[in-house]
Image (cartoon, rainbow, N blue to C red; front, side, top):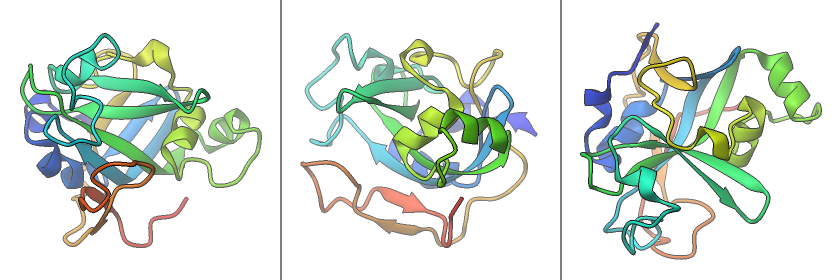
Length: 182
């Protein structure tokens, strides 16, 4: 198992997103296989980067391979992998993982609730990801990371419209592994 190199995250979010399926999201003693993602680019009205760089979304503008964490609905954090070249506002929302290691710790963090990481807010809660992690380098260091264990992305991931947005509802930039469930 090795960390995903920055060079593989430097592409268009729409290409990187389905490629991230079946990679591993790792933090502390928790490991989960990425099974659902969504792409966001600065030319996309649903993207935080659409109106340009701000203090809140600055991490989205690169360099690639960093973690963009935002707070939503006044109660949830969401984790994104920054993609594209530096200066371009793009990221892939990690919507869900299939827990592999650290399952008891994830369960404790989720107060024993089932469905540990089948949504972006649940994922952040299970992995203890919050605003302190915004901007962390996923490609090196001791913090959260995206790893490759040799499992290829699915040949034919399910794609469709993104969830929980109010603009660009018909854009099919959401991908998931068939039968993915935790």
